[in-house]
Image (tube, rainbow, N blue to C red):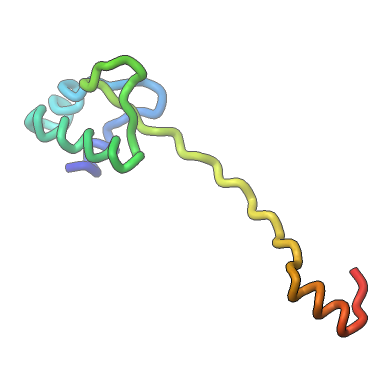
Amino acid sequence: MTAEVLAALDIVRFRPTLEIAEELNEIPWDVARAARKLVDGGLAEYPADAQRDRLRKRPMQESKPEKPRKGGFLDWMRRLLLGETK
């Protein structure tokens, strides 16, 4: 059920759970339960106000490219012992 609800959500617009239930031909309480699971899992979000009858997909966070690791103590020691330069 959660997969179907997630597929019915929009990233921009908050959709009422009743509207999603009608679209999926499901019981509104089941859709609300699935929506709560999606919000708890971080895949969807409620609006900033206190209403919990609408939700949307959460925008995916862009992952930052991983920086190359700086050499630590062992790398410094290896370069020192082997006479390597940076």
